[in-house]
Image 1 (cartoon, rainbow, N blue to C red):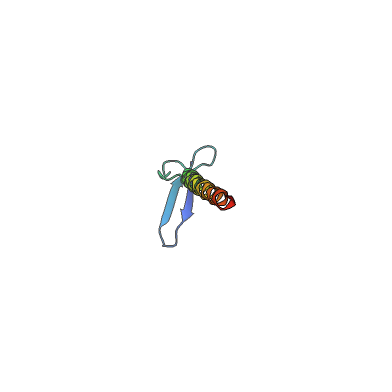
Image 2: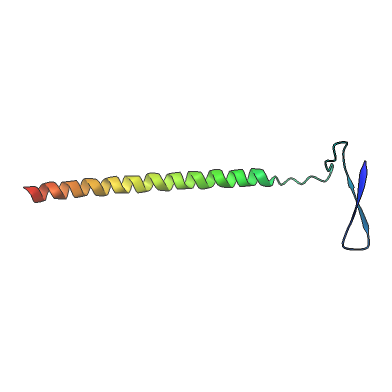
Length: 74
């Protein structure tokens, strides 16, 4: 089944459709939902790594402050 689609130019563009009305034969290799999912996943992983690094740094600072407090208490 074919449905005509007019273009901005004077030519007539024909796009193939299947029985369900889905475009066939013109699908690009780009899946934007997959790209969005991957970007979300990489962003999440990056934030997780940053959180872990910040947590380690804060724990080290707390340990140093406790050590200083103990020395001052003596």
